[in-house]
Length: 447
Image 1 (cartoon, rainbow, N blue to C red):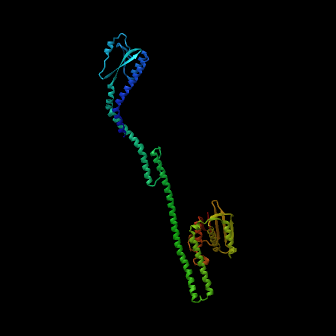
Image 2 (image 1 turned 180 degrees about the vertical axis):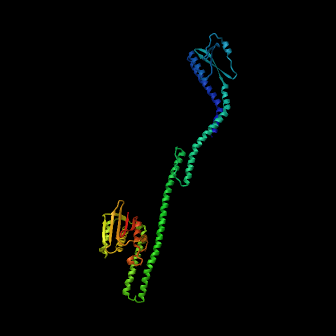
Image 3 (image 1 turned 120 degrees about the vertical axis):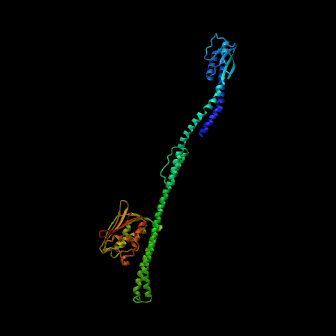
């Protein structure tokens, strides 16, 4: 493009420069000649001679001023000898064939003068010839300049595009860390800036998507765990209900047919009712377990005074026949306020305090502590009892798992207490631990 552009300009110079130059020269001669006419009107020969000097300087043409007698009056920058004959001077003046002789009549101080001057047309025509002769050199120069300008222009233009292509390739690979340097405010700079903004937006969207995907995976995994837990729970429930249900059905059928010794209805009807009561209690706890993971159950949180709630549950335990046999120590700070589901936290306290009373011997020591900590609060309960084997501690949080292997519900419970307790703590975001200590065990939960 540059080569074509410069060639067109050069061709235009060859075609139009001579004519333009000729017209320029003619206009300049006419303007200078007009100045000579104006000087002649002053009727001052010296002023006229000065204007002829200026005419010679401006046009590079030598004017000759001759009076009416044919005598040379003035030639710029040439001393005219008084004794020089007119014929000799005029005769010595030679005129080339290529020269156009211009003759103008000038009147100054009431005398007529003749002004001679010649313009060299050959010099004007030579311009085209010189330009044509110089064309190969100009073309070579134009090619070199075009190559150099094209090289640097392409580097300046293509390099940002190459950088954009590299960044775009990295964006295809989901790598948005490299940013484009913006060096200008033109379209390239604006495109670079837009690519940087797009990379930032894509990186932000990808990060949010990865976070959401990670949360979704965790939720799916948690849902799978809950589903598996439910399946295991249903299987365990089926097993737990099958035995007492079969026992009650057997008792009722034997009493129905008055099979000895079950014909003693007064004795076996209360026994059947006791078994059914245990089953009703088990079913109620199963319903509580099924409700734990429901959003409505989790979201019902209020401000609860943990200190006051602990004291209230202990007050209820005072009716326990073994209450006065225990060595109870309390270390409860006042106004320990927590955010939790009131029913859930009450159920947790009833379970762990009830276990401390149930699984400790007479005159055993029970220590209940509710304290503020640097980061929040902590509840702990210690009861003096035989240590639990370490391998059994983890299993205690499984549904229907009991240390009491005999299956006696009175001494061993139904195996749901700690399971429900830990599930209630987990869904509310509380941490907990259960471990052996000297001569006993301690259960702690905190936030």
